[in-house]
Length: 411
Image (cartoon, rainbow, N blue to C red; front, side):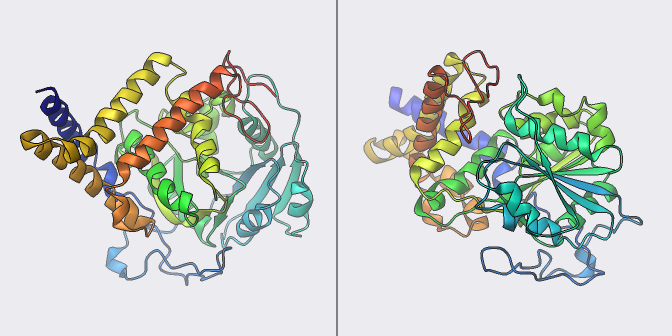
């Protein structure tokens, strides 16, 4: 009877997730509109040697529901960078190559880099790019947000929009044009894109699609994008924000200590107007996670912060993950009768719900049944994140501990 109760509860959880969680798993929220069909698209080379494919390929004029702004507003891109020599030329180079028709400048905030990041950026020779030497990290701030706040200050009152983007993101030539079109014509104070993450090594192929899938489960994009509710989120790699809305919300300082800064930022801006978050092929992450350990470090950096640094929430989450992901395959393989059938149903639902994300990342559908193993890896990373926090090494990034035991930020 206990086994049957567990199987039925697992099945009920998956019925709710699939049918009553804003369709998070369908991956429908994408930047497939607001593409400027009236002007030729550039097919510039992406930084990894492949080619950009027009996102509106196969669409007709009747499929298009957006318009170009009558006047393109001034935009300043702010790129915080700390020891990013491996990727900075491709990232900043893709920004400098934007075909944006309005005023556009790029501020790279060098956050105490020791590998020549600033010199590489200056060496690009673009008149759009300025390198700002960042001040030492202030108490109470995470490193990234401290750098971004300095960029916002340097940008001043000139730009109408700020493009906050990471140093490891490469952009298609029309990324900014697409972002601004949506922000202006759809009246959004924040437009954010979940950049396509690198998915080449075995560890990346096994774990990265699930990373985005779990993010969508926690923050269903359709719910985020719905007007008139207070549920906000964002993806930190690409965020276009209306400057006056950011100022009205209290500026970057309002989220200065947030380890999961993008979602805190999205929630903050949702109080000032509508936000939009979606998947994209335009912006791609060029940071490498070639090993299982590097992916685990990326996950564990903020996993315990997501749980509010609470041991009780950690215990409940671990139990919930076991019930949701581990119980169905175990009971499907070793139980019999009604218990086995219910468990098979739960396992089938989770495998099917993973398929749209696997297609988006062009991965084999066979990774779907493996989701219980993938979820177990993520659960382990969450426990490891808590252990790192206890050791005073929480949120470790580029030599900085960003989530100390007292939850203050240390240099």
